[in-house]
Image 1 (cartoon, one colour):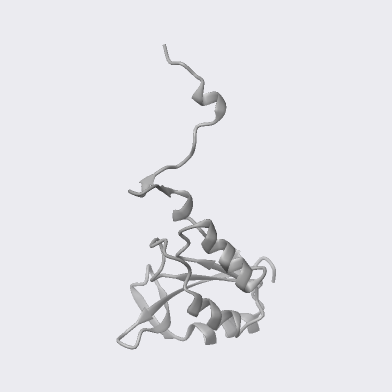
Image 2 (cartoon, one colour; image 1 turned 60 degrees about the vertical axis):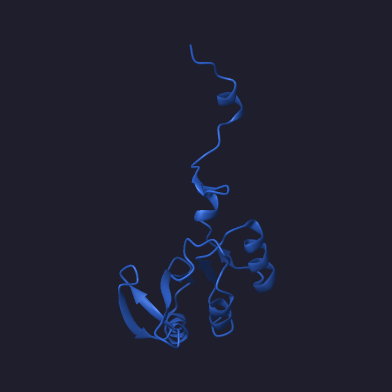
Length: 133
């Protein structure tokens, strides 16, 4: 089971903003409750569940703690969390609150500075000293 990983995309839906499992880039609402779906996956023997907060993905304003609490308190399967990391502090807070848990942080490592410029990599020491003739 350790090699079976399931990703669940979750979005707040409707006026009441209830969490729901979504698919196809959140274009299809499944009417499935994320906690019930995660429990079913656990029962089926998956080794890890990755939860993606579609609402927070790319915003860099922190993880959806309410969503993580719901799932973390309902299942024993290891979780990895995606969607919302905006700083190393966000990751630290996640680890501190939940113990060992995986954390995704794509935008944190790509978008830099006040204007969120795209920075794919930094020049290394040798590249900084190269002169172009």
